[in-house]
Length: 440
Image (tube, rainbow, N blue to C red; front, side, top):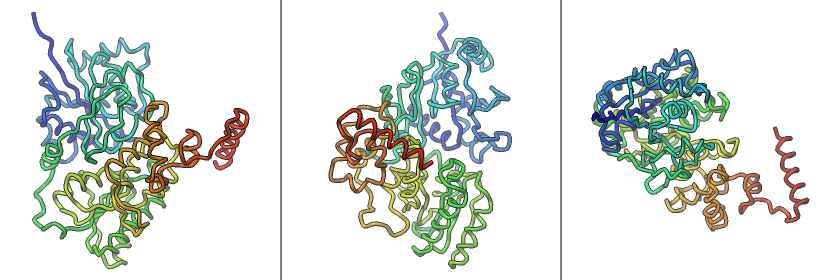
């Protein structure tokens, strides 16, 4: 009697995600398999003009972890990975088709997916309905709640959440409603994989390197206008120079306008500093090894936490308070990354005296409170820690993480007390809705 093959399929859309998967494999996070497939998805708005991760510099050094590399874009061409999910009536046909073209036969399949609540991961999970799922999170969003409700037939298959231990002691909220067990990918395994991608380490002593400025292209996410984000980057330049740095390196987002880099170069020159632009499509962590920066500056990039936690580099943030105030809707999945960076990374510019890093125990309560305010229906059990935090002595220090309207709607401490009579409460709610409509 023949035994079934085991095929593990790892889905990745970024080089950062591929490095995380490689680190998890190296550390033994996945059991033995007869075949391992890396399924590459290119989620860029125009994939034809953006190279996929398997064409990125250094990927070939990670390639030997996998028996084959497949393209999800080619599999569903000419459809876009970010906009296609199979129709329920087509699932039986497509499931058989996928097993045939990927030579899966009757293999036992195991899936490792990112962002399972949205496509393409959701579509892949639907097309391989018998496969147990491991979700891996390569950024700060693992600490936040699941952004929307997931079909229990999908979410119930998730056994683990693999994540980088970016904030030691902080517990991830993602997918906990399905009992997914969080499991940290060892830091040493991740940094070893980064070393494979990087060139020679800089020989300079720590502190002698340049200040590294991280761009995120928040305008593309509609969190800022292009002009506001350019001003945010200029604040990074001014703040770094004010701290005494005369050599600056700007790492722009790959799709950010070139004009931004020119404006930063001119601003640095006017302040007596020299700014160069790192135009290679490499990970920020590769630059930490190659440049050994004296300071890393950003807004709420995950790379700020890898710099601080994994590489012991000084870090500073810019613009988190302003973004927290204007981020809409409150459920926006960028809120937890903003909250965490604002709470644990010191500001680049002078700020309030109480603007200091938050201890881990208080940070867990803060993240739980924000997580409940974001997704009260998905994580109702977080109400108790939310009330505890918002009624405690540390609430005023973190009040800027919440809006009065959201606290009022959820009847949390810090909101506007509503009358108990049902009719009066109804009038108050209508007044709040009218006020919100008038502000639009």
